[in-house]
Length: 282
Image (cartoon, rainbow, N blue to C red; front, side, top):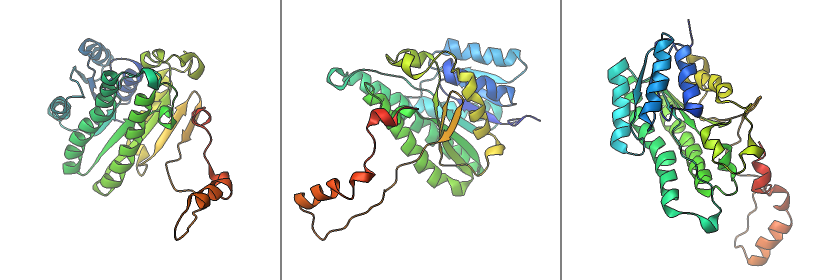
């Protein structure tokens, strides 16, 4: 018996790249897959490949950035397959410009797809899963959330994904719903847009290497795993430390500029974080 036998899964942005790999791997593990991509032709190609291999799949070309279309996606999964057991919030767009050249229209597009699209699909899925008392949401973050040069909008969008993962995990755990995020690095069409792609990734780091992690998180094998940010780079699998207060915690009845300066020169000096470029090494 495969780990996803009988489970109905919705995967957004699944026409190519990481989403395509997630969809094919989940289907091979027994899942019924609703393959979503704003490029409907690519979604149909992936769904057709799943069906040719003996699996069950349906293609959909809806935009997750439209709340009504996102909600309809979830409803379609339930209608077609009788349930929604898992959602993979993979749909995303990239954007790379330095801050002094950034484009407001492009910034908005990144946030609408990467943040709002994930929230629209996630909240619609949560309504269905809450009623059933079970389900899994896998968000797709990025190491960029730690601060990538020349990609503020994308970095901010993935930071938001990390925050929503933690929030949803806290809200939904008692209702039998697990929420995690993967932060993969692989050679994809989105990665090819990054002017630093040659430094960050290579063609050997394929989406197919990431897919087993997503299948695991969708399966019952990962029961009890929730609220985690999981980084996958090449052959390295790791948990990402989440924001938290650091020691020492200093207290004064009233802080003056001089006392703040003394704290940073003294006790807080050893607690300072490394520059963003160093944090983003993996």
